[in-house]
Image 1 (cartoon, rainbow, N blue to C red):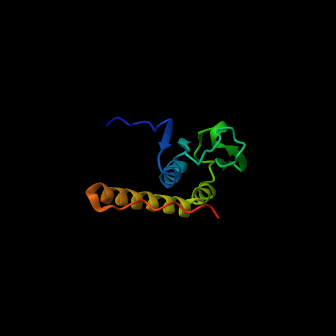
Image 2 (image 1 turned 90 degrees about the vertical axis):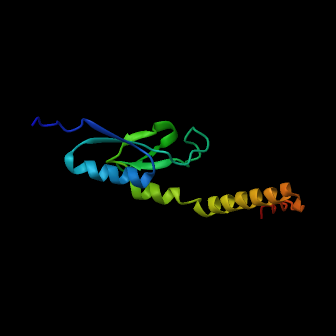
Image 3 (image 1 turned 45 degrees about the vertical axis):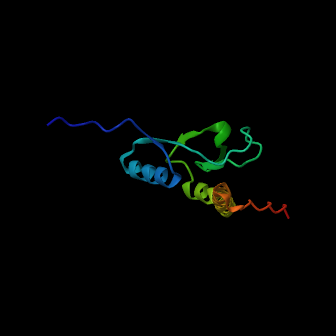
Length: 122
């Protein structure tokens, strides 16, 4: 049987937790691993800092320095923590959107339901 050589590189794209464990899987074999990060990006210039990550202990901005980085150097735990910053706000927006769709559906069925006015920012 012919021996298959190890891969030269592994590329991981997807949910951050999956990319983290892909990197941990390839690390003991010394396989270079490239991760394509998809952090929150607001302005695309690095000025807002929303996409800030730590790569090998140095601060990088995914929108200008990436999005591809050496997966073995990414501070995955720090990145995952930052990605959770807006989790509650995103959940509220998601729930409101689905509530509004249900109300509009009822209104379209002739029930006279209306979407409530949005609360002003406090």
